[in-house]
Image (tube, rainbow, N blue to C red; front, top):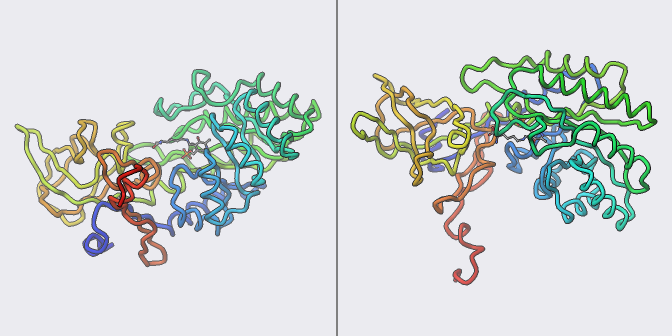
Length: 400
Ligand code: LLP
């Protein structure tokens, strides 16, 4: 890749995504589940660029959305409503109403109260709402506590007994139709056992519901499949599929997958330029033009992202790679060995395709970066860098 030419044309920082690689990840995941009916619902939150969603829609991907904004994004990108599901612990009435009107496949419910609220809305609209219930199986996903979601102390989902109550109520309701069951115990999971444990508990519930004459169609196993950022052990795709399939023996359900990170994390990088290098005593800092507002993962989770300087060589020494935001949490790497750097050198923050741009902000009144896609050897811009005008345009009374 000619990063120098890209930098010249688009300026830095920018995100660069490899669409061909995303496509091949998608196909590999689909292939791993070939023994059963399955449907991938890409977790839009991981990277919600419309061009990326549109490329996935062309592969027949569905979309897992956690706000009505994400639902609308998916539809705008060409998704069919029956390939969209709506999850999240805090969907409000307006969102539920819109989702019902749009005729999406199902809504993942996370509480009895939410179900009652949805029933009321469905009744008003004279629609039968297709629902699924998100279980909280109380299983430890063994991942970073901020992205672990399947323990009883987490806000997500409902306990098994509560789920049963929801299904029994919904099955009798004129305006609700239970069609699925859902769990998602966390993200960046590299030891698959907790996922299989959750799948087994969920399948047990499905069997109990069947005994009560409640038949479901969809078995939604969430996302969570981890990737290698540093030295994690890479989860095996076939083992993942086999473990889930094994939990379903004797049940005829479509498996719904909600991968985010697995599809896109390793297919994106954040390209930035060095502004300065400086020493504070014997501590070395490489200061770049991207910052934590562009990629929050290191600041928020102390997440590791590999860093490359494709045009620099020579002796390496330890440094912190930092941005220009007025916080000491604004770093991309700490104590990382890198060659000597000077103004204009290009530095690449790897594996930033998931939860990179989608978590970026305008903190310090910084415009969000532009996004580029590489597809069949061609580069194209899929989002422009924000302008100052865009940053202030909602602040009434100041635009002339
Ligand atoms: N389904 C549901 C209901 C989810 O909450 C999530 C992610 C996914 C699917 C997709 O999970 P994945 O396959 O990407 O692990 N910002 C964090 C990750 C937060 C994940 C939130 N939920 C990070 O940068 O690591």
